[in-house]
Every structure is written in structure tokens, then in C-alpha cells.
Length: 303
Ligand code: FAD
Ligand code: NAP
Image (cartoon, rainbow, N blue to C red; front, top):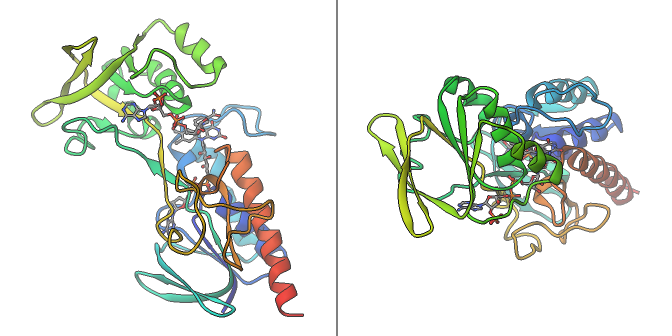
């Protein structure tokens, strides 16, 4: 029996792993991919306190699993598929194993949403991408389209503008929702052409993307592009807990200031929880808060 099982190895889960294991608890972290979380998709992060030089998300997260393991946190590459609450413990199933814990922290974050144009799924890996830092290199001196109007779309458009010859930034409204400082940088970048009030309709191409059909002012046009990067928000990964705890209307897990969910012994941290500001620093803070309170919970139960 583990004291604490953490599901998800992004900033929230890894921070929880560092705190829980350093507080002397037998801790297991389950991560279905490589630890690091969605920030590893980002080409740069410049707002994580104490890290002054611009780093990629991958670089920022490199040390976090090692730091957790240093204090004894076990990290396994397994996807949690079921949480079963019992009287005073949890059963957690993966495809390979069954584990038990006295407390559980869910930190499964979110995943990129699809924009919904024709050919989007079909051309993934053949010109349609959700990760500029992973795939941007392939578009050196080429033309790409970026879809979206939030922080991610604008930041990644800026990143791609340094690699590609030209970036079309396509947004469905006439106002971005990204931070003003990022908008200012985008407006000042010569090889980014902004297309407002437009919708991506269809990928043009045989084997690889050769163009994108868009609709603007009720007129259709084809942009000749070599790649399409989609950044239209994230889907909350709440599948494991959606029938166990209270959620808000966005599907985010409701928590109190201790990161306690409506189910005793189950904590939520990071992007998955209600009112998260969806930042690495906040996710890390949530992970620490959840772990410290889970430890207190276990010790109180054992008194
Ligand atoms: P995530 O990072 O999403 O991690 C969740 C982890 O859980 C993932 O590794 C996933 O594989 C794993 N998982 C999911 N389901 C299971 C399961 N069933 N079993 C096991 N593992 C599972 N924030 C900033 O502060 N600054 C930035 O500059 C910034 N830039 C960003 C750029 C991009 C492109 C993106 C996408 C996000 C950016 N963010 C930024 C936001 C930041 O990445 C998130 O707020 C943060 O990563 C949330 O951390 P998390 O641990 O809650 O979730
Ligand atoms: P987001 O803020 O939800 O923005 C999604 C964008 O995609 C919006 O502009 C939205 O349009 C558009 N969109 C949604 N569905 C669409 C569709 N089907 N077709 C076309 N466009 C569509 O998502 P995000 O940019 O990924 O950011 C997620 C969170 O992480 C945010 O809280 C953000 O602040 C944070 N983040 C922070 C940083 C940073 O601090 N540096 C960096 C990245 C992300 P509308 O505007 O019309 O809704």
C-alpha cells in the first residue's frame, strides 16, 4: 500500500511528488507519457520565477522527476485507467497493474483540442501539428498557418516566425485573447500575417499539407501553406474522476484551498482544477498544497 499515489507527471504532479516523498511518505507517481507535462510542448517559457534566461519547456522540466526520485518518489510509465474509492483507501488500476493508496492526487492536466476542419485528423504528422517546438524545424523557410487567438497560438506563431518564411495567424474573431505584451510582439513581427474573422475549413493536399481552405467574410480562399499548427485550447482530462467528484460546468474539478475534492482523501492539482490560472508556477503550487494536505490527512486518519 502506498501512502500517496499521484496521477499525472506534469508540473502539478511532479511538485506533489517532491513534497510528498520529502515529507517521508511512500509515494508513487503514474505518468502515461514522459514526465514533464504539456509545457514540454512549448518552445519557450519566460515567466517561471527564478529562471531568467529563456528556456524551452523541455529544459525547464528536465530536473523535476530527478528531484522527486531523489526523495524516494517512484515514477512509473503507466496510464491510470480507473480509481475505485474504498472505505479508507483507493484502488488504482493501470493497464498493467493494480495499486492501493491512502490518499490520491489527480493531476492529469489537459490536452490540445481539435479545431474541427476537414482533414485535421488525417493530416496529423503530415503537416498538421499541435506542437511548434516539436515540428517547427520541418518548416524552415516554408509557409505555415497557425490557428487560434489565445496565448499559445500567439506565442507559438512568434516562435514559428523565426523559423518559417511566413506565418498566417488565423483567428475566428477580430480580437485576440492573448496577453497584451504577446499581442504587441505579434503585431510588430513582419512575417506574421494576421487573418481575423476567418475559419479554417479544409486541408488541401495529397500526401502532405499543400494548402488550407479558409472562409473569410463568407468567401472561401486557399492559402498555400506547408503546415498547419492548431492551438485552440485544451480539453480537461477529467475522465478518471468525473463520476467520483463534483465538477464545474467546464468539467474542471471543484476544490477548496487545500486542493481537497468533494471525495475524502482525493486531491486535485493544476490545470484540472476549477479556477486554475493554467500556469506552471500555479500548477507547482497546487501540487505542493495538495501533497502537504494529503500528508496531514493520512497522519490524522492514523492517529
Ligand atoms: P499537465 O502539464 O497537462 O500534465 C498532466 C500530465 O498528466 C501529462 O504529462 C499527461 O501525460 C499525464 N496524464 C494524463 N492522464 C493520465 C493518466 N490517466 N495516467 C497517467 N498520466 C496521465 N504556462 C506558463 O506558466 N508559462 C508559459 O509560458 C506557458 N506556455 C505554454 C505553452 C503551451 C504550448 C502550452 C500547451 C501550455 C503553456 N503553459 C504555460 C501552461 C502550462 O503548461 C500548464 O498550465 C501546466 O503544464 C499545467 O500543469 P499540470 O501538471 O496541471 O498538467
Ligand atoms: P485559450 O486561451 O482557450 O484560447 C483558445 C483560442 O482558440 C481562442 O482564441 C479561441 O477563440 C480559439 N478557438 C477555440 N476553438 C476554436 C475552433 N474550433 N476553431 C478556431 N479557433 C478556436 O487556449 P490557450 O491559448 O491554449 O491557453 C490555455 C491557457 O494556458 C490559458 O489560460 C492561457 O492563458 C495559458 N497559457 C499561458 C501562457 C503564458 O502565460 N505565457 C502561454 C500559453 C498558455 P475565441 O478567442 O474566439 O474564444
